[in-house]
Length: 381
Image (cartoon, rainbow, N blue to C red; front, side, top):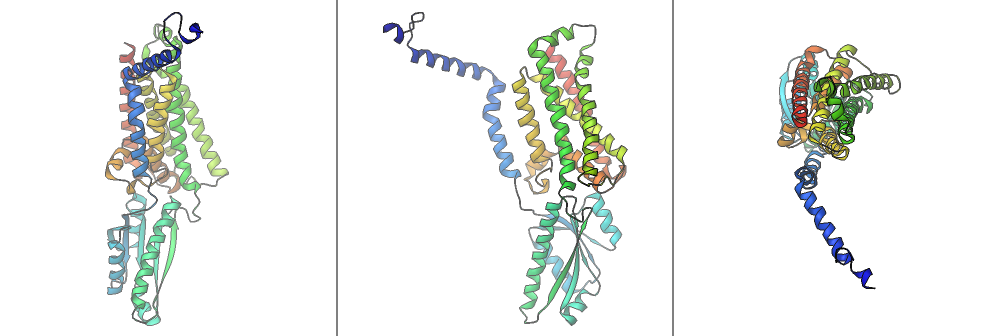
């Protein structure tokens, strides 16, 4: 009986042994700074991102006005829209060509067109017609924006009807780039960014860390091949696989989902290669600061996949997020990649329209590649 209650070797009861092991595990975790940071800070970071990034309402949407009427009635409508929390007036335009240019440059999400005979028709016949043009490359956002605009126009109409005259404002809505409001137009560019980040960053980091765990990385590094080529050799296969994935995604989206490739295909592929290089560099960087596959997977999932989904514009509009999160989104390569893919693939724009996104992705790729390789060499040293 006494042998069952007290450990014969250490003289400790089973409960005391269990408490000792718990204490040892706490000491082990507390000595691992990275683990403590992940356990304590990551939930806070995720809560902040989810709490502030997930906003279904849309505010301060940039819009322009083509006012061919230039009457008191048209000015009242413009002031009512600009005075709401939903819209922010960017410019007064003078032609439809200017509307097209602003949409292509991404300066506006909505254009309000007031024809020259609007006020005359409204007060003579009781009915005036307006036109709303929306960027429907993101169909959910376009539907919400036009709904807000129609609601504001309805409120203005009700204000006119208080004078006992049945005025009616008719709105013609035109969705640009995606007239059928197909959701595939929006999620295909986002899926491209998400898949590439998953394959390049997560799988690359795990594969390199696996070599370190198994002890084969040291064997490779003492070979005649320089360490930089050993690391790059681990990334090249995933570069080729990711490129094939892009071709497959584009083929399926075009033939099965009927998403057009309106722009230059070679430009789209070059853009994808730049993004792949940045994602591969992130994978190498993660592998240089981790020593276990579980840690690499956690950092890739929580540190890369979550921000890519939440802060790249894939799910929620970046413009509606608080300024700190908007600033953080600028360092996420997927944001610039998704914007550029939409411009080329959906809007049919060329190099001149996406030079900014290309420059940022190129700079990120070079910077991350240099830092990741340097960090990897320093860790091995």
